Length: 166
Image (cartoon, rainbow, N blue to C red; front, side, top):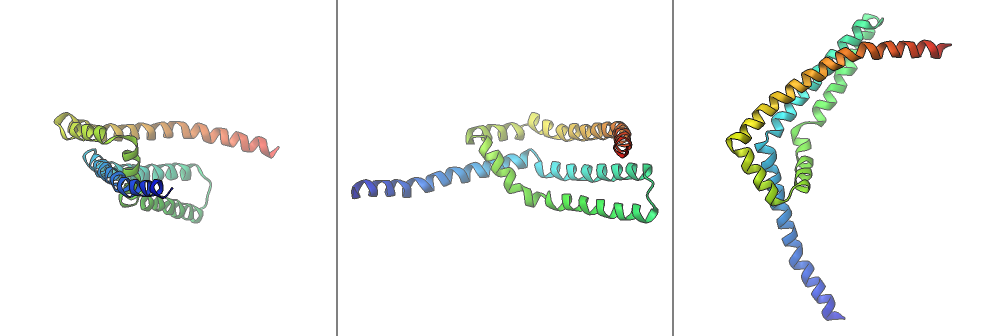
């Protein structure tokens, strides 16, 4: 029984560092993948767009509201605090490790190496550069959608409140 236990302990001692080395290598590749695909820059851009959308939606809401100036200021203050929470909690430094874990678990080392090779090539760099523009345009399109839909949602909300008062 002791020889079998010693073999298992020996295998554990030998294989654990090897498994960790593979994880470390894949983590490094995942981090490089995030760098070559400019995820930090895209995250910052997304946060700026989010803050802008929150501000615009708040302004639209306040335009339609019957709140006093004092209550409008209070609402703006708290909406600003919510935007600050998003800004703080979605800082790259706070979310980077989670992104590395996600990418490292989604792709093999071989796949990551090939993807990095592509994104370091001219077509890959062009993709990343234009993808940021595409995402910006998608954000603008989403904002326009929200602006179009919000009055309809407000109308439905008014109707519902009116019916609930009966």
